[in-house]
Length: 70
Figure (spheres, rainbow, N blue to C red):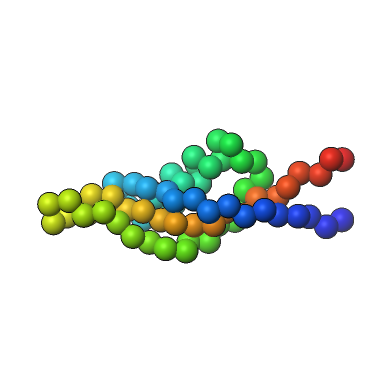
């Protein structure tokens, strides 16, 4: 039996860290997507306010398995 996957691109954000931005992005996507199996970080960037890091932003692809009709 083979499986089929779909990929979506999301951007997670956090004021705390890159790791938190990843976790936040996956958690938010999981509210509407089922069967998330993997992620790949494509870009890491951030926002600067008053000469300090105000927000971390992580662009990533999520892969999730498409459910069978069985």
